[in-house]
Length: 229
Image (cartoon, helix red, strand yellow):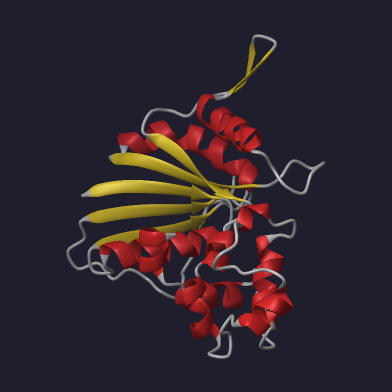
């Protein structure tokens, strides 16, 4: 059985990866465990999403660990990697958002490249190592801006939220942007706010509360996400 661990910064990412893995592998062929960091010295908490794997003859096992903040993702990977590999895990994947530098509303490719390099290879300042490189068989995937950008661009799910969200010319004019076409990484507003704006077209909203966030996660077209987007 292949074992893989994911370290993410929040419950939105945790539920998204859970659903993505079930859609790819099939709920009967994968076993998934969701855990949440509860603080130093405290036991981790088990989390239960709306859609759960129901393994009968699992070929895969996934641990999805909510680090409760982006600052905890890489340190937890560094801390847990040896133990996980000793338990038979073959790969560890982190997921982190990437925001624009504080002084700007948008980022440059150089900003992103520097961020990627420092995550992978660590940071050296004045010939002194500040942060460590990632171990072998570990990687960190970057959601440019935030995970909601992936939701925002997955336009097939809007009709499942409400059939009145058609994103016709009138609705797009009201929004001031087209989430299905535009380069969302260039938006000055957050993806969270943009997603709320789309839902608000029909009097609905998006929140990071479990019920609203999971409603979106459940309605995403995962084939469209991992094949096309």
